[in-house]
Length: 453
Image (tube, rainbow, N blue to C red):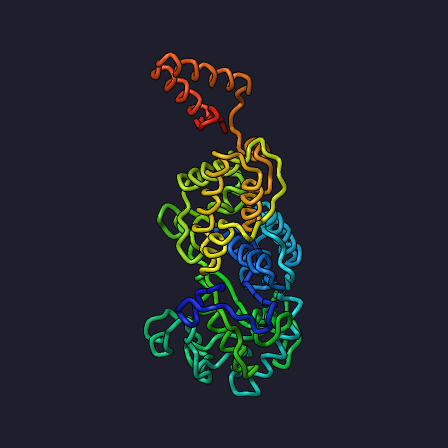
């Protein structure tokens, strides 16, 4: 049975859907004011993998991933660019869709935009005010009163006292408590606004996901996911808003993927180690990047470096090389031991490193036997993870950085083989190194020597 590490419970728990055979899942998406970065790529790929496995397990999944298209950063960027907010956001939504498609990420079932749900946000804020969980301040903003929610901090494990003592909280003299957060921002000059009972304004960030989740999945649903950085305060605030307004549990299972680091340092623009997906894809094949992300457990830190991407490229090439010259349709044999091993791995909190190890075991078996059933199983299980969807030839060609003529490569391989027969191992090693320097890797097996770029 599938077990998920539930951030709220701080342990792995057996996943039991609220409705048998159905799964409702909401993931916090992107704020669209710039190109997506590696952190976004990890969220996209991780929860795409989760959705794929749930569906492959026979479950009917409704996957919602929102788009934040109104926000302080969006307004600031549009003003800097001198362009309309809707033009800016649509441009980066299109770019996000292009990036995610290249990474093999399937489109979520529903992609709600914040600006489409402002009326629902106004309704929830009104309910929170009626229940004394929110108040309008003298400056016109509406704040959530954290003191009114008894279980505030249950997701992050932080008490209000600890938060007040240890967190840097924005000083706002209009708040009753420094930890109170904004639900509705009163209108400011030259900013988009909507009519509300509290005057013209726009919603705060946290209220968006509470409303979009409830609108598309109901007031209580199965899984809520996002990056670890959203655990506090965003997801904590979502729980406070939703459970106070709706008088019921908001989410059963909370999932958070780990941070992305660059050469063992936190990725940040200030450190100059901030990479967009587009920058990375100029250097590495998109499937290599997806493989690299899945190679680490989703809750672990992901350390980006050229070395790790190069290692991922070589590893993925091994899988494709095993399938070289074999034309089979991907098929999953659930009676095979390999499927049971694969399933055991993924069912253990989506342990993709162990699942990938099953693929390499199949590749080794295929290299020795050439068994077409093994090849079909390898492709079938890999496809569940969004891998090995291309032919080996297409992958090798896409990853090629060498202009060497194939005939010349084969000639050098033949020369190396002759040198080995003559026990001239120095010459054989020289040829191997010469090819390697030009981006060509040789692999010896029982059938001879194969090569790949």
